[in-house]
Length: 104
Image 1: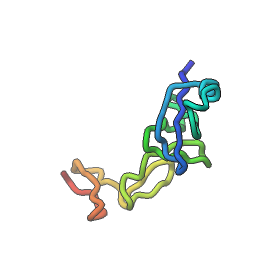
Image 2: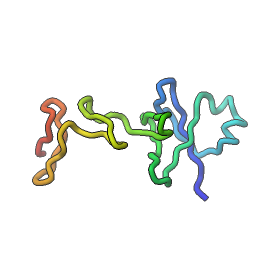
Image 3: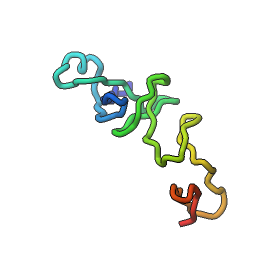
Image 4: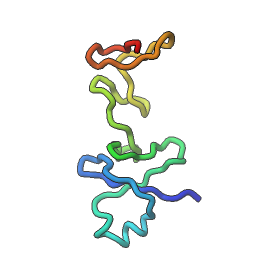
């Protein structure tokens, strides 16, 4: 049996803490576990384990990492650059200034 983990959310649905704790313990200790706590899973297919700074998406009951760059968009459960990374050469890193992959 896996151990339960819960993520504490701020008012913007951003994770501010993650703890290994049961829902019953959270409920029994409201002074210690204030605010909103949502269960997160590290061993469940289709679910992203929450980390501090991740965003909670209520519509999918899942978490996502912070947007890596302003130009990237969210689709198919992942952040996507405006252009795909080249499949040959490299290594590459994203340049937000150039909006392109550049060799490093």
